[in-house]
Amino acid sequence: MSRAAEAAMAASYKALKEDFVSNLTGGEIGEINYVTVVAPAAVVLWSVLQSRQSLFKPYTPLAFAVDFLLNVAAILLATTLYAKSPILLNTSLLALAALVYFIPKQAPPKKAKLPPSKQTKDVEPNPLPKKQFLTTYRGSMMVITSIAILAVDFKIFPRRFAKVENWGTSLMDVGVGSFVFSAGVVAARPILKEKLAGKSTSLSTRLYRSIRHSLPLLVLGLIRLYSVKGLDYAEHVTEYGVHWNFFFTLGFLPPFLALFQSAFEYVPSYAGLAILLGIAYQAALEFTSLKAFILTAPRTNLLSQNREGIFSFSGYLAVFLAGQSTGMVVIPRTQRKSLLLTLAAWSGIWILLFVFSTSYKYGLSLSVSRRLANLPYFLWIAAFNSTQILAFCLIETLFFPALYNKSTPSSPKEEEEVYKASTSRVLEAFNRNGLFVFLAANLLTGAVNLTVPTLHVSDLVAMGILIGHAVVVTGLAVGLDIYDISIKL
Image (cartoon, rainbow, N blue to C red; front, side, top):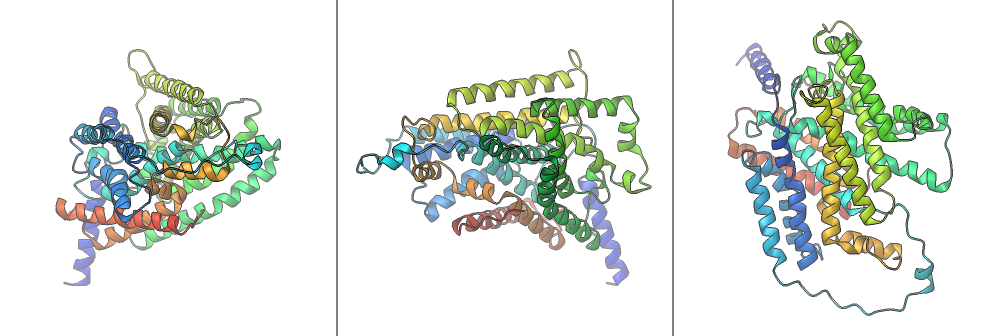
């Protein structure tokens, strides 16, 4: 075959791949909820196995295999083979959990009771402890993201789950927003540390630190840009623009957050700031030509070529601030009943605001748009993630009361032991090096797409590749955790 013919075939296949992810309209929010609830359902089964049978202690190869099947493979199945019947998968997981629950509980090994030392009596509990339910939430989010970025390139992954072109909701749309929301949740920790220490950082210092934090992400964005263009990789231009990509969005968030911390003096609520920003951006979309510019303008200069990424940044910043607001609530050590009530209240508030923004009869009659990252999109992401965190918090509360129900303060070592015993090693590993694992999953996705004609393989081959991808990414994450390696980007 001549080079010209090979080039023509490559161009034709690239066009096919771009068409495969273009002009999609998404699916129903109810179905997205059914699919994503597989993560809490799997965690319920994991929690029953651990709390009743101590299956994951010690962490043997069998324990790793079960951990992988529950917290990774179940999510893969929900988005592929069980995409048409996620309720069946969820019901099966919960039924198995009920069955295991009624098996007689394994007696825990007896420990010799030692008199509490003076050091333990005087120990001050960590005011910002590691929370099992937060690790589980962030780990699950990273798992589904790492799976979906490759699965979307195969026909076994339903088109209604792929990113929507203009208006609508999909699984991958909620995944992008959830990534930003969860980043906002953990970004609350340094602010809380500052408050506890009674310190206040100047704007210039905050900007310097945030830019230093942003640089690796912006470099990754540039590397992705040049690799995509250099390899003539199939890309969906209306997702972020010609040059913009998700790493740029993540990279620019910290400096803008540093600026918004100054606004906190006037609006002392990150949720309030998020809502005001979301409303202001939506007003700009509705009452100026901005919406038409983003959706229809010709790509004639740098601004118009990257209009989706540049202007949707306002919506993602609102999502990030909403996540930070949640982090300010869930990270500190608080009474469990108060935490559950607060989470339930905020979940209800975000849901009501979302319903109001989209209701044709009683609200603003707006449609969700990830491309614009508009007000309904921001409210949907906040409602979805708040509810997910509430669900994982309820699971932890039911099955691992030792994590929060202590009559006497524990030493840091004891707290760490209880945390490890009640947390999935796989989800802990995904959470620990989340951004690096996400980058590795992106590289593997690129390698598969450059070597495999993903549109032309059978469902059986697709599942084999996706399982292999999941095993490699999970193995990398758990391997780093076993060797106590943290890679911060």
